[in-house]
Length: 386
Image 1 (tube, rainbow, N blue to C red):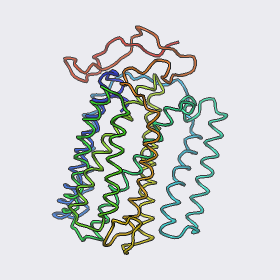
Image 2 (cartoon, one colour):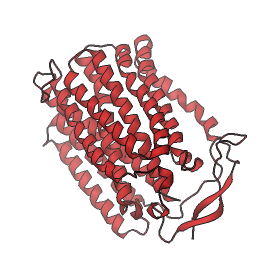
Image 3 (spheres, rainbow, N blue to C red):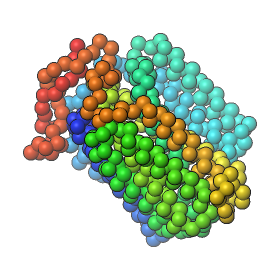
Image 4 (cartoon, one colour):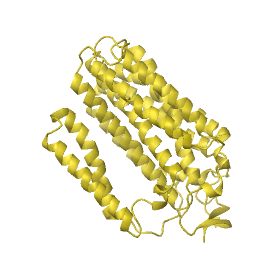
């Protein structure tokens, strides 16, 4: 995302990130189906051999990267990074082990201690380190925090069904690996389409409209999954597709807005922190979903009055996942109502003492260059200067 954000200007960045999201969506759609076929024909171990073969493309893709990249002059805060890692590991360990071994088990206590130590270490380093792990300017900007919070909340609601539905379909509906792959295909496929549409809409009218549309679609999808988790797998496939479409509409505008809000050397840090919260939210959402499904099992009796049949635990879990989407809707009030190209320079996050300088030669890829995406294709653009 950092490379794409640097390669494209604000007027087309949403569409560029939408293409990236669509590519990921297509891969995610093909993955479950291909995995099901391989598992049926050659066993589950073959999936890992095929996945590992993708690494063979790395030497070729490296050639497309720029030879000279913008680097930060600040040092890396390893202690703060370790504290952040402890915090994340502890937060994930508590719900995972709590649902499996009990909320007073040794591993739950270990996870709570790890999280507390990590939080304390990170807070101390943020307060006293000369170059903290997380740029202080990011934490002081309400709009960036709202965007990061939305990424956390939306992914908590999105990743849990992606991981939970195959388990539900296997144990409650008795589907094979191939059949599960077919049921899951609509989600990533519509996510790819949603990413492209929302990217174009973000470039034209800003992030607020696509984010709100996507959030509402996700709410409908989660309520449908809660109501029909014990019903026909093909009904589940419809709501899984709606879930993917809604997520595609939300995800692309968030990344595009962050890339326009943050300037200069903080861009990589801002997007990486957003990605960390993105997957942290997904992990916590998944842990909570399985905590509910483990507690209630496949028994009858759900909090959703429209639910019937088995898998009450999953039904309650999907209902719970509507809460982070509602939170994301509330945070969307912080999004700019205008197109992202109109974000003022005063709103952008820059390093202390830095201003936007004119006509400073900085390498940027030119999308319509005669050699597309070649690192030597550069132009003079405004850059962060003293």
